[in-house]
Image 1 (cartoon, helix red, strand yellow):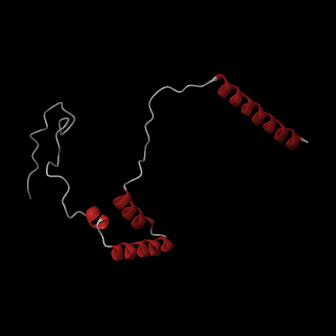
Image 2 (cartoon, one colour):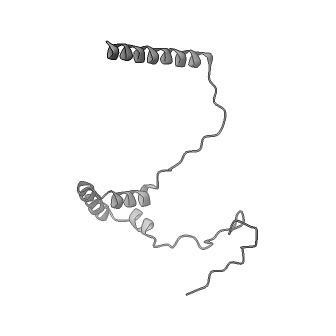
Image 3 (tube, rainbow, N blue to C red):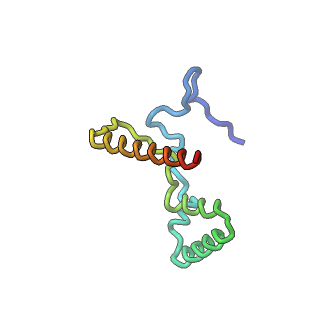
Length: 115
């Protein structure tokens, strides 16, 4: 078994690779599963689609997710939003109106349960 090269690791440095330095300088292998799925013939894509439908009917979601992640890309699990949120006076008034309506509805429910 080949020993990993840890020359980039130094005491006190938390990251393996420096900014701009690749851990895989040769890139993804040419015959990766993703490339093969994307370059499949029309006939193979139809067969795969049929199998995905069959697996879906059997409830085997993991197999479906794997295929879709490899061909269409994974859905981001987290969305980072930066910036300021601007609340206009109209938005504030609408929110206040909605809160009043909610409180009125809660009051009606409370009154109805005590009668």
